[in-house]
Amino acid sequence: MSKSNLKILVFTLFVLFIFLTGYGVFFFLKISSFVQEPFNLAAKEKIFTIKPGQSLKLIAGNLEQESIISNKAFFKLFTKFKKADKKLQAGEYILSASKSPEQILEILIKGKVKLYRITLPEGRNIQEIATLIEKANLCTKKKFVDLCHDKSFIISLGIESTSLEGYLFPDTYFFPKHTSCENVITTMVGHFKIIFTEKWREQAESMGFSVHDIVTLASIIEKETGDAKERPVISSVFHNRLKKHMRLESDPTVIYGIKNFDGNIKRKHLKMITPYNTYQIKGLPMGPIANPGALSLQAALNPAQTVYLFFVSKKDTTHKFSKTIQEHNRAVKKYQLRKK
Image (cartoon, rainbow, N blue to C red; front, side, top):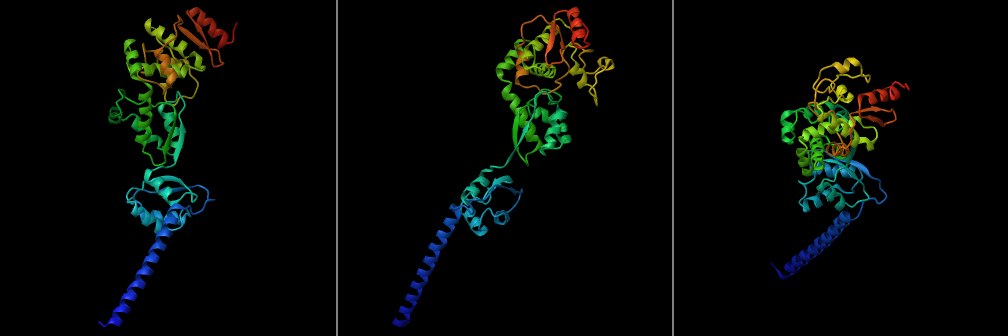
């Protein structure tokens, strides 16, 4: 090769190097700007969904289509550079173009999905909770109820009972949309286990009760209580009756054993023999009749010191407590029959 041709080749390579280097710098600056700067600072938040099994290509394309990012190719390149293409988690997210692609990627990697709030009030039974769960679109009512009576599932949760009635702790929970029914129930039972401490277990045992006994008693207290201050006193009535081997005679236990209860308890209902009717059986029913809160569990373990054996509703959320059947009958006439 002649010297002139060599000079031309060297010059050409030099020019190409400068061009490529310049383009490389330009490209680097371009993608750096993309990664760190939000696409639209004024953008509002929107729900963005990643379905299980979706590819990075489809996710990036959807982000661009929803105007959350400006360049799907850059997002794919950045995600692969971060070795995060296999780490994006399925779920519902609240995203906005006011966040940088770097921030958006971090949200998708950490699975910071949108959570749905659901509040379970004290004193609801499995059927009622299942209805609330279904309305929140977390699980079908049938599957929820079936799982709550599934022996192997109950055993896996460490609960010694034929159902999870009483162990679905009432509280406010937050779940992602695509959570499993099993996870919903496990979370509730797990919360119960936190609330019902080892100290409470030991206290129950010292009183001659199992955990299941206390949960059962607490569920009755929960259903009988209208005014929170009365819980320990109502508890004392049931404890006093148990000590005297008297039937508890609690209307809510009767109602729990009636299928399709219409809201009107009748004398015939009181005579029905079920594992829950405490007008007919002695001692506690076979299990809880609702899911009690912490205050009712505490009241079951710490009854007030009274000699009361009876109580009747005064129809103002409170009760009239009595020591004898004679006092109780007079109270029934006064508050229920409105006779002086």
